[in-house]
Length: 393
Image (tube, rainbow, N blue to C red):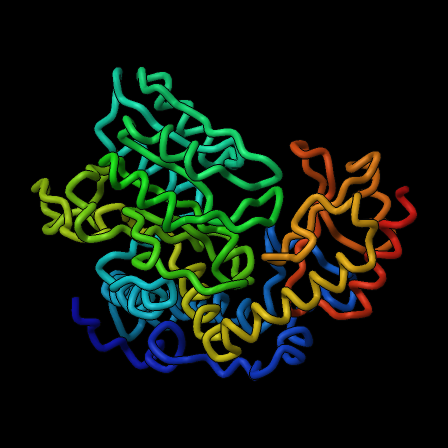
């Protein structure tokens, strides 16, 4: 779809034009995050701290769309043009074409929408792992209510036996799994798991929410049918900035349960779904969050995904090196910025560190604490976190 010319009131701002964020290095990224002078923040895996420049992008869009655009343009036409511009910006970042990308509210929104769009019922089998987040577990439980057999493959310390996975999906219609374990910080063999599911003819749905922002994501390289993610974690965006990538050849299998005028080819009451991932989009959803997502992607492209990944791994390795080896539950050689640590009282440890100005989170399975190490963190903060954790033993 060709993006129409936006009116003057928004033509020079995101998503139609790049923002002047003044962020061109990791040092400038840190300086732009307002909470870094108040807390040592290690909870990006839950929700990332947003730089002031990106908050301004969202605020300026909302202000212009609901004020200036009403004077010199059509708010709906501008909004629809913005959706297309956002798709054009975000799609290459995850390795898909714009037509293969839908804008959702969150990762959970995308997971739930895809699972509801599959024609599954009694006699069908869905396979997942014991690593999944409630965002996947809840809609999978809904499938179980409909008579679908939900089979879970057990893992060990965030690792999966691919032979066991292949055996489990051999008779399955659906495979749902993480690309990166949120509890262990391990990278799963996505392409191999997808290939095994494909051989069985199963639809593959990958939760990649912990990936974008700390490493490159390429949906087609994985071979997945659908991939969900969000901008509010490692991409440091705001809530409401989810996305869903659907491979073109997988669209025919998906008939969204919820439809509205953005889901169909002609919004006149006719019922022909769009021949694109946008069939999952509905009505006048909040645009500002996705404008921020598009600018986050632009920012991370400018800083360099590989530069960010290397700094995350360097900092995570610095943290692990200062902790007792027997207490580190995540890989001894970090694969991501998620570092999971065994402490006697996880929730009490989180609260104690919060009072000391250090933000981490607790986990229930495994019963540990988890630190999310991003590239905006510093060596001094890493050392401080390690010292605080030592007092837990």
